Length: 414
Image (cartoon, rainbow, N blue to C red):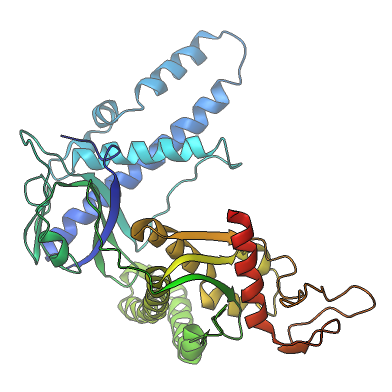
């Protein structure tokens, strides 16, 4: 049986799940255990880093280093903390917590800063794995995590979970399909989700023949995007639409928080505060779902209908420093959109590249003249239409930029 890494195609599946009260308790227990082990690994790592800076061969220091090093695995940690041997805790959840810490520690070599402690919050999360003991072929229906039908999934320690999502299409596949890491989560709006990593040697989607060849897209805050063919996708501005209602509900939440603290009550025991917190979380979740659905539909349409998609290489982190545009940039979700284009291009066998946005707006697509030279003034955000002083061509700003982005992308591939 092939491992996940050796299989050609990989796919992520996320489903909404509806656990019973007893199953919710089991998810909470495994989430807490996973967080505790991760934080314990962070504490051990920080202490080892400090002890190894002591260059003197002190026996006490060396013994402590040896003791901490031995504790860095699931079995030894369970022996040290007896509550981790609870039968309700998935052993693979403990192993995944340690593996996640080691991935974070390896990232420390690339990004400054050591792994941080995971704080306790309203979000729950833990990971397990699907195993195939005694099976010759991996399917969606014969592992330790498996589908019983379109609406039910069996998960170790949790049992039978009722789910809803797009899994029905995948269950019709007769080819070998392996389930890898499985993640159970609860968000701040008290919604539960089950996510799976899938792998197969056959594609998970049917790639239709592209209707068009190449396209360049210009992302902006006025409209969501303008492509090189002159098509404009308007910006839905989901957050701005709900902002007034959200501000009102957050004020009520703040008042209830102050009242609870004044009366020396814990927020977790304050029923009115928890009701209002859940209401605010659902408003945030609604905006997130609307934006996510919009980005998914636009990115899928672009990738399925074009052989090559070229976009600007945007650095949203730097752009958010502009306080006048920060809200609009955060609301539009550019980084998420570019990420969707990237993975869907791999999924459908298309090409997606990003190019430098330098002078894409200031350059005339017809003659190549760049505004800001030879005594001309650079275009500002207020200039939505302009005429080239060199050749006299009249341009719609975003359409012209999209054409320049496409030309840069074709030149980059040449």
